[in-house]
Structures are given as C-alpha cells and as structure tokens.
Length: 237
Image 1 (tube, rainbow, N blue to C red):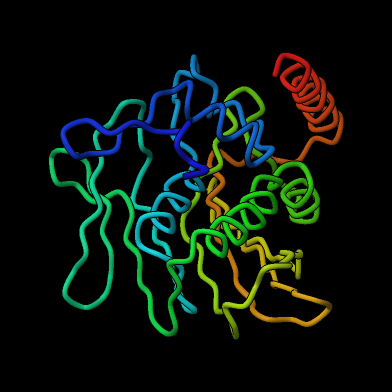
Image 2 (cartoon, rainbow, N blue to C red):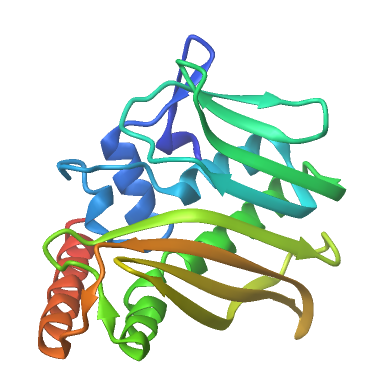
C-alpha cells in the first residue's frame, strides 16, 4: 500500500511516529507547516494522513464528511471502528474519538482509484498556506501569531458524482473567512474535475487561533521564511 512508509501496526493499532508524519506532510502533501516537524513543541499528525488511512482501509464513498476531534500526537495508538449506521470512528487507546466519518452512496475499494483520489486531494489540501490563507487573512485585516502559528483541521466533506476518477484533478473553487474574536474559521471550497468535466465538489474548514491585527511587513517576512524553509526541506529530502 502506498501509505506503508507512514505508519506501523502494533497490537492491531496504527501508530504514526513524528518522523513518519513529517515525512508524509512534506513528501505527499507539500505541507511545510512547522506543527508537523518532529521537534515541534505542539507537534501533531497531519489530518490528511488520518484521512488517507481511512480511505485506504475502508474505501472511498461518493459522499463523505470527516470531523476532526482534536490533535493527534506522535506514536499514539489508533484504531478504526465501523459503527452500525455506516459511520467510522478513529479512536486512541483510551477510547477517545479523534476522527468521525460519515459516508453514503456508491463505494469503491479499488486501490488504484483510492490512491489516485487520495494523492490528488492531499496535494491540493497541503497548500493551505500561503496560497489560500494569506489572502483571506489580509482581506479580513487579521493574522495568526507568527511566533506560534496555529491552524487546525476542523472538518472536510465532499460529494462525487462518479467514482470513475482515474484522471481526477482537485481545483480551488473559492473561500471565506469568519472572524470571531481571536479565532477565525476559514472555509475552502474545491471541485473535482475529470477529463474537463466537474465530477464532484467539497469544502474544508480550518480553525485559525491567536488572531491579531494584520501586519503586512511581519506577514511578508513570515512568508519569506516559510518559503526558505520549504526549499531547505526539499533539498534535504
């Protein structure tokens, strides 16, 4: 399976090391968020890796919604439970739910279809910053704390009109940003296109914490540092 390098199985549960999670974020998703660095003080496993594991183990459905319940730390034993109403629940060893999945409609367990969809989606999803978030925050006159940038995956859902998606591409389709005090909710819309035809649509929600007044100079410096860091990481890989 194409995800084999990014997790191990211990006593029947998934375990994701900090190094595996960081490697996935950079190699598969092009996501250089420092929260996924192995030595990050508030390290967390990328939500897109949890999403990918769900699809790889339980298939792709035409309608799916993923609700992320909290940050997943390194080496946390995880298991996926199939519930009676065709939903899925990913839980840690204490039984706490970290991801809840609703699904319906036509389904596929074809590894080629699942890999193609997963790789296209996470390549789109990994580019939250600066591609989509920076202009959103600038428009609203707010920004995260550059010393402690905290952007958390809240939820994601999509509907596919067809699972015949061998040539699928995921494209940005619009965005909004709602500010509530020091917290902001970013909604990113996307569409799935195959052979120049729209075959589905979806959206993802990100929560941005620690908002403050937008400072163009500080943000530009942060973006420059982010891009330099990305180039350095790519060279090291």
